[in-house]
Image (cartoon, rainbow, N blue to C red; front, side, top):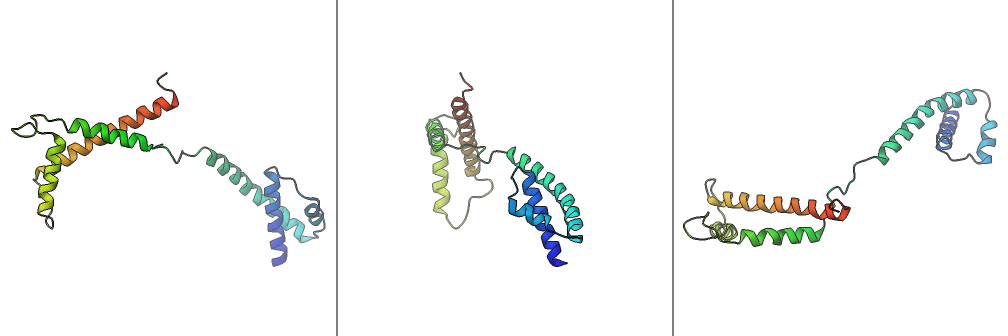
Length: 161
């Protein structure tokens, strides 16, 4: 019975594959007709069960063709470099918003990094201005990167014509 079961499983698998548009070779068809007695009924039941599995296989194959694009970001090195430069330059312009003297966000941020590295084993305190500078500088960087990526991909895909 184990031989009959494995043979019926093979027939079901062949039936499933042939249902996907592949033709059965003549040797397999001849072998199929040589099966006797119970094996034929077992094979037919197995083929019925496999047709359900076949339909599920076809549905999953169709769903797989409509999957989400893995490279949804479409990141470009050029965009990353240009946006880093495009944020570093404006953040380096001195304004009066950071203290009494004209200083830039970039210089204040780099100074606070140096000050905190001088006391290295101990990190910055929660009320240290470093956190404000870090969050502000990186927020600006990520906004510029996002807008740069949108603009680059939009132009590349023809949205601005």
